[in-house]
Each structure stands twice: as structure tokens, then as C-alpha cells.
Length: 392
Ligand SMILES: C[S@@+](CC[C@H](N)C(=O)[O-])C[C@H]1O[C@@H](n2cnc3c(N)ncnc32)[C@H](O)[C@@H]1O
Image (cartoon, rainbow, N blue to C red; front, top):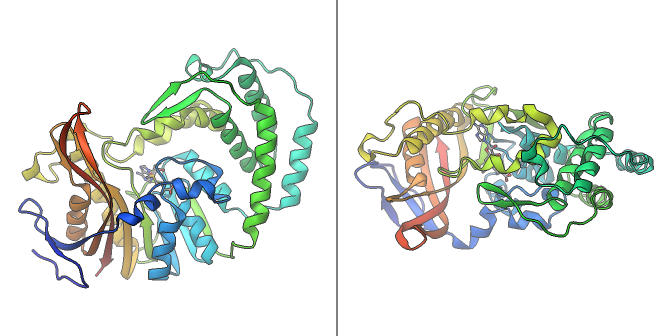
């Protein structure tokens, strides 16, 4: 079946294995916006460095273009799309399976009382340091800290846990920011490595970071508008939202072959949630490789790719269900590099979406890079793309 083509731009036929037609246009100048880089210099957006996030600028483009009344991000991560909505006064709903992501997004969206934050910070500063026991901390966490940094982190965590909600969340975020800066953690792709280096003094950094974040609240107060924003720990494959209730979905799911990356936040999670923090990861996209689904039998996909597209099919069907008639889904997705081939996640997702009832308006290619095997043999070109699709 072929899709009617609308608008300008070259026609693209996806090939016999997944025969749909759509426009594919290069927008390589948007490539940086599909990364977290721009957010690093924007107050509040930068309260937690979420490696796999996209930037405010990308969301703003689509909020301006589609002017939704209510937006959903079923993989909200660090809350970029929700914060952009708050700047525009648009109601928004976010879901994520990661407790840490939910905490980060929620904390960024709260209308903070600056005086209350300042008063709490003064109280924390006035508490005399008492060396906490460290013996219970597992080797696997302890190895990322100097003895002093670990003591300071545990001492501050104890104080923070006694603070009432929601202010506790603000200071937990300050704590995880501090852990990132004042530990030997080095995030190397999907791995955490210990890299010994001189570290800033933990407590001093914590206080400075808290002051800077309170200033961010003041700066952004003028920019944020009133809206209803909610963030829930939940699964994009099964959303607790009514049918036909949102206008725009702006999201980016985990990319195929990069799905292990939440492991890189396990130290931060340990300090915020303790040992129970790994629970959420089980509902991650594409992790159940115990069955064969044969989503694209003609492609003979590797097992993990098959499981991934099976889960993405469930997510896309949910997106279709919760969107209003004529509602739009904007999905940022990257293709995947395997030793023998590149898997075109963007086209396969378009095919899944078409089967779910969406009309694929256009695929914008925002980045292209080589997929190599053993760092030398070129396998092909991987795209990072933005799919625009409409519920008919
Ligand atoms: C690419 S990141 C999204 C980043 C986000 N756009 C931002 O700017 O921070 C994908 C997110 O999907 C979440 N995730 C993975 N599986 C999920 C599922 N089944 N349901 C909901 N969220 C999930 C991950 O925890 C991660 O935060």
C-alpha cells in the first residue's frame, strides 16, 4: 500500500520489505537540537545532564508549528518537552519508566518558592558535619568516590531525607548534580568507568550548586507560564490516559542498540532511591528477548531488534489511541549499527505507524554518521531522524 504524498520534497519509496511512501528531507542543521547540547546552557533545563535528551529548540519548533492545547511525551526523560510547554503555557503530560527521570522532570516543573529554598539551604549549611558510617555502601558504588566525598554525600543525603516534600526533591537534584561533578564517575557510552582525578570539595560544590539553581528559579520565573503539567512513572506501552485526549506527542524513545544506557545513572539512583532503584528498568523497551515476534519476517532481524520493534509497535498503537483525530506525533529516532548491517529504525517505525493507522507526513533526517565494524570497516550510514505522523 502506498501513502498519498503531500507537500514538497522528494518522494521516497521504502523498498519491497516495507513498502510505504513518504517524503524524506534533510534538515542537518537541526542535528544539534536532537542532542542535549543546547540545554546545557539553559537554566533549569540544565539541572541534570541527560545524555540522551533532545534540546528545547527542537521542541519549540514543533510547538510553534502545531500549536497544541495538550502535549504528551511518553518517554519524557529529563522533561525537555514538558519544560518547553511550561514556557508556552501548554498543558502537558509526561511518562517515563525511570524513577530518576520522573524525579528530574517533576523537580524542574515545580513552581518553587524561592524564599523557602533559601531558608532550607541556610538550615542545611548550619548543620554541623558528623562523619557518617560508610561500611554499608557496596564496593560497586564506593569505588566512584574518595573517602571524603562519600562521607559528605551520605551526610547530606541524610539531612535531605528529613526535608519535607517537595523541597526535598530540589535538594536531591542538587545532590545528584554534585555527585556527577565530585566523584570519579566517567560515563563512557553505556559504561560507567572510574577515572581518578582531582575533585572539587563535595560540600562546597553542593552549596554553590544549590545557590546557582535557586538563581535559575528566579531567572525562569518570568519565562514560565501557568499550565497543568504532570509526570508519572509509567510505561509508554500501556498509558493511563483516555482515548483521543492529546493534540501533540513530542517524544524520543530509547534507540535500538542503546537500550542499556540507564545503567549509567545507577550511582545517582542509589543515592536517591537506595537499593530498590533498579526495579523500573525491567519494563524498558526491547528487553524481553525470550520470544521471537517476527515483526518484519522478511528482514530476519537480530533478536534484540525484533523485541525492540515489537515493543515500539505497542507504543505506537498507544500513541494512536490517545491522540485526537488529526493529532500529530513527532518522534525523534536513530538508526542502529549492527556488525553486518544498519537497521533503519526510522523507516521501520514509519511502517509500524502506518499499520497502526497513522499517515506519515515526512521524515526529516537531522544527522548522518558512519556505522563501522571493528572501528574500520564501513557498514553503512546511520540516520537520526524526526518522523512527523498524523492520526487519520
Ligand atoms: C531518549 S530518552 C528521552 C529523553 C528526553 N527527550 C529528554 O529530552 O530528556 C528515552 C527515555 O525513555 C525512557 N523509557 C524507556 N523505556 C520506557 C517505557 N517502556 N516507557 C516509558 N519510558 C521509557 C527512558 O528511561 C528514557 O528516559
